Image (cartoon, rainbow, N blue to C red; front, side, top):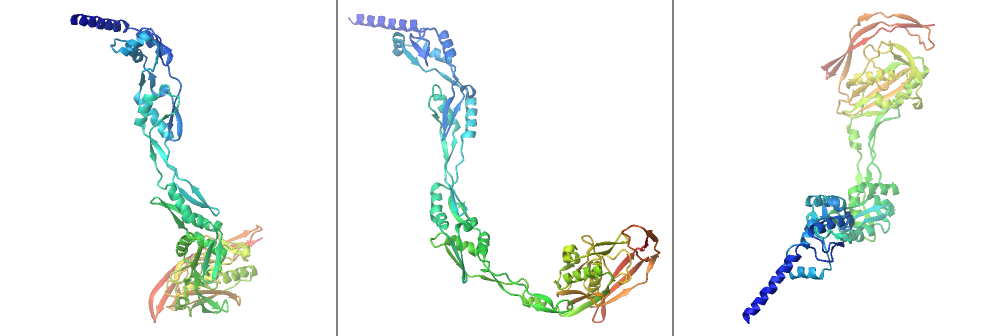
Length: 547
């Protein structure tokens, strides 16, 4: 009995194995691969059918955070492995399910897919460069009296390696977007910080006017005038209010310019005008608002419903106080000098305009006086006329002509006041109404007269036209007695004579050219402290006869 049973089992097993072997070379009947019928075909034919019927062309939909995109299978290295798929459908197997598939036949199976990993990684990295998103930092700004809110939002970054696994496993036949794994990137300033900034500062700051009380005066600034000075800056994950005190102070002053007063410098003026005596004009304190204090108090006040700032103005002292002006010691005549006028009334008027401009100039210790800097360009709008001046050895008319006489007069005033000669240029040929070697010319803007107050006291320059002369007087604290000396003329050159028939001709007398040396001796307490020498060369001036 037992031996009979064993024999029967052997026969059945042998038949099972024989059946499996017989079916191993073909695909079970009615089997399809993703809709491609390969039932009953041999392996190679099945592979050919799969390769021909499953050439993926449709893009694979994917989602990265909130960004939807697609991957082209061909460019991404995604394909169907027809040989591997066919091999899975044929071949010897003792698995009863495989045998049943041969008997039952009907089935639709998924293909085996292949992935070019470098190509897929490169495609996902390219996708990440487009789809990765920076977080949006929460912010509050101000514009036209209102708070402008930027809501915070997270960003994201594609996890490329993990995304490659998702695509490799699920790409074939995907009809809905594959959710690719990402890392969320949170902003430093989140929405909670934005809402706190709005409720604690921005909303109350723009809800009504800012009231600023300075002493006994009060101004109200509407939000539109306040918000240009406001900002909210990110720090440690929070938005903190900031107030630009300078901008806010300008708005406060525009609302009421009497809230503060500029200080007035003391000075030294000529009492009675040109030709008068110097007198100290007292300075006056002003008031000012400290911009930093205004900013700090405003920052605190704007977070309250009252929005009110109370300040006491600070005292603003003048740059030159009355005591400092008195200490300048502008009390003594340092020098006086005068040069004779010509008969040209227009030229004389030019000198009057220049004298009024120069008169009353206070030269502080260490400061350099510039005649061009004081007069500026000589124009008709300033009252200057066209009159004669020397150009290339000839007399010509120009607006402001004759002002060089002011340069000569001031040069001599500086000379005898004992001040430092910084720059001067003598006339090209000698003019007999001026001291030889002790005169200067001027031209805008190339030739200037400059001297420096090298004393410890102030120097006040006075100038006026009267009695047929141009006068100057220098005031200060006397340091030296100045003694002038002059050597004989030498290197004398005789002039030429010419006739000019042009309409612009101006006749002039001939003058010899020569060299001359002038000395300035500084005497203090009867002792000579130093001697300066000035060497001047005059060209001969050609005599001109007009026809």
